[in-house]
Length: 153
Image 1 (tube, rainbow, N blue to C red):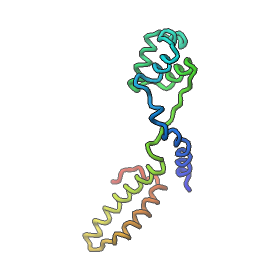
Image 2 (cartoon, rainbow, N blue to C red):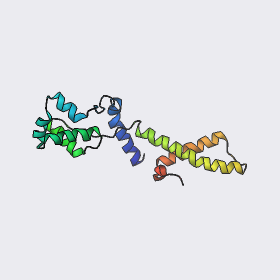
Image 3 (cartoon, rainbow, N blue to C red):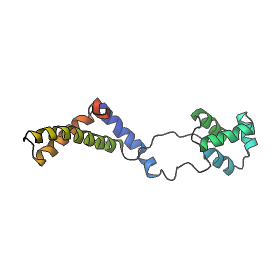
């Protein structure tokens, strides 16, 4: 097993609980800062005081979060001021293993398709079973290769 494969499997195990509950942890429409601040009964002035900024800065922070441009360090400071932690993670839509396997199959199809066309023109086309076997072999090789993510030339 390659180092990359071990890392993929480790990440897949760690994020699986998050993927199962991703809709429950989706950012509220108004953003987490505003939602938690409101739930705590804290005004923008109260949060501003705790952060050492102006209420206008808090409103700008909430707007930047809603717009998806908030800085992580700023979000962390706001969370801390409200007794929260920021949990930062990439949650793959599918497992990383599956993502790599699909990419490898696509790349193998592309590479073998080019060869298959040439072979057909020379009346040397391989059988469908042989092509499937070659595809699986090439896909397995690609999952361990640095060329997996390069676009074919």
